[in-house]
Image (cartoon, rainbow, N blue to C red; front, side, top):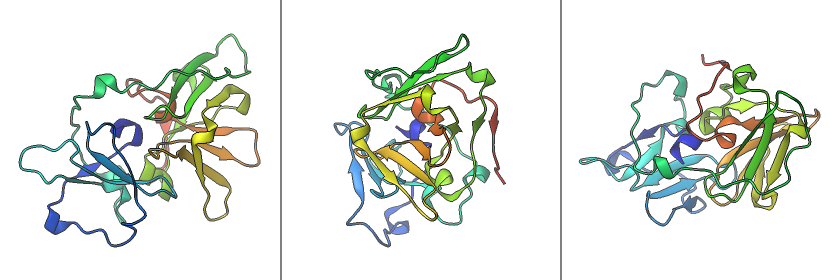
Length: 218
């Protein structure tokens, strides 16, 4: 889950942590209690914090997603990677829907989806070495660690659309979509062009490495 959502955890002591608003409306997700409990905003899907997740000796049982903190630029943070005992089991559910309509000699099928498997996605693309993959610094993309590709609609199929929630804000130009059960963002629809913005982390498993990654990281 952490690799799909791009979490940057910090572990404050209880005396250093306080929820200032919204505690009553936060949603949570726990997978059989094996990896703690994760808390999210049910409106926009932003991951806020977790309890009893990846705790090491001497640390608080509270983890806060640094991406959700005001005034923090995640592109400037230094961090270390912690190996999860569950990485080998973090595999997206198989795609059982109708495959994309697009055809072409160079197209390759990529499948993936959200963490709980309620929503799965299939995308036909040129090899990823030839695909532009973008990460930008808009407010919601920073919070959700969005890394996007831009396929045509005919190159994309989604299964489990009934499990999708959509968040619209400001001009309501882009709909940020996420799994309503554990708030994993994976797709953004663009209203006036025949294209979709697909979150790279939602389409591909964590073993894939982004290539041709461009974006404003200032």
